[in-house]
Each structure stands twice: as C-alpha cells, then as structure tokens.
Amino acid sequence: RMGSSSRDYTVFTINWWQNGAKLTPGDTFSKRAFVFASELAAAKPTADNLVPKVIPDKIDDTRWNPRAVDIYKVGTTSFDAVAATTSQGTSTTCTSTSATLACSGFSTPKAGYVPFFHITCGASNYLGPDPYHFTPGNGEWFTFPGLSNNNTQKIRSYACAGEVESVRPTWKLIGWFDPLTCSSLGSGLSYDDNICVVPTPPPPVTAAPTSLPTGQPVT
Image (cartoon, rainbow, N blue to C red; front, side, top):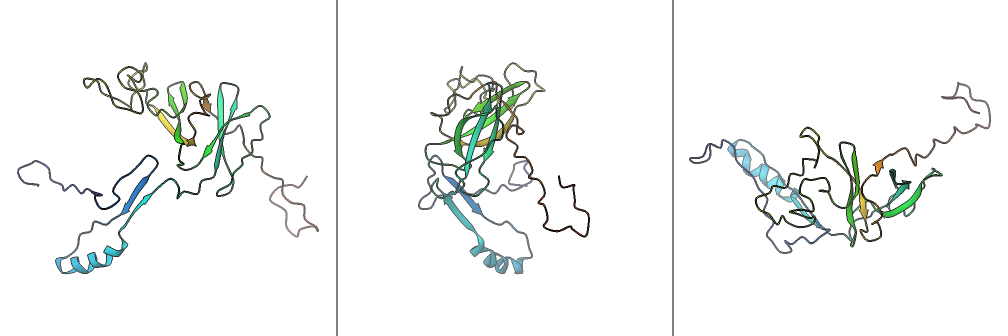
C-alpha cells in the first residue's frame, strides 16, 4: 500500500529527459529496461549485470528499410494491399485482371507519408489516414489530427457512430502512404486479401522418375 491511498501496487514509469529527448512526427522511441525482485544481497550484482543491457533508442524515419506496399482496387467496392516480396523491394504484382493500382506506399514510416488504416464499423468500411473516421463527433466537435473544441464531449474511439453499443470498430494498418496522391480512397472499400493472390507454382518436373510418389500429381 502506498501512503494513505488505497492503492496496493507500485507504478513504474519511464521519463525520457536527457539530451535529444524530442520526438518529431515519424520518429519512434524505444527503450529496453528491467524490473526484478531478488534477495537483498543479490540486488546489486543483478542490477550491475543488467545496466549495460538497458538500451534506449530514437529511430527517425530515415533509419527504416521499407518495402513497397501497393493498394489495388476493384471498382469502388473492394481493395487488396500487396507488399513487395523482398526486403526493400520496390515493386508488387497483382494477378487480378479486374484490379487497378490505386495507391503506392511503404511498409514503414517515411517522411511525407502517413499511416493508412482500414476500419470497419458493422457493415461500414473506410480506408484512409483518419483512425477516428467512425467515432461519434468526428467532424463536429473534433477533427483528426487535432483536439476537441468542446470539452464537455468525450472522444469515444471505441464506439461506432450510428450503431448500437455492442458494435465495435476494427482497425488494420495497411501501410504508410502520401495523403495527397492517395486521396481517391475513403468510405465503402472492403478489404479482400484474395484479390491479388499469387497462384502456387506447379511442382517441378523431375529429369528422371522418382523412387517415391510425389506430394501431388504432376500434370
């Protein structure tokens, strides 16, 4: 118990205050730290062993090695997101003849690019940079990114505007895209990861008959 409060646990926080303690849009801060419990005699040697393993790091948007992520649309109803097959790959392939390339982005943060989400609320779909698209009050007393202009209203991101309380939104991070060149996306696009499925290649034909049956017939 802490003092005269009714709390019977200890809260641990990490305060990043040393030189360079400033995050700009697109930056990521990570820190590996340790909390342990031991006998008093073992506390100092255990801590001394862990000190060099504590690693703080600030990762800016130039230190990532992203691969390309492309969004392919089928009409105005569905889309698929395809990533390059290799690390730092710059191209993707979609086998669907009815899909068209709608937007190109990356798998990690990049200067000038913002995260795009596919959000569902009941039967409604949205693809774009606004994670609060279906939140009650969006566009009325608050607009993302930004703060509420009405302190009497709560921003309930867990709720779906116009739906019953039991309906909850889902989010899927698609990638990082340019919000200016990808402005043709938005409401009504459902995510279908079967649009651009690459077919499994047929098994190779051996130069000579095998001694055991193959896993599947060779045509």
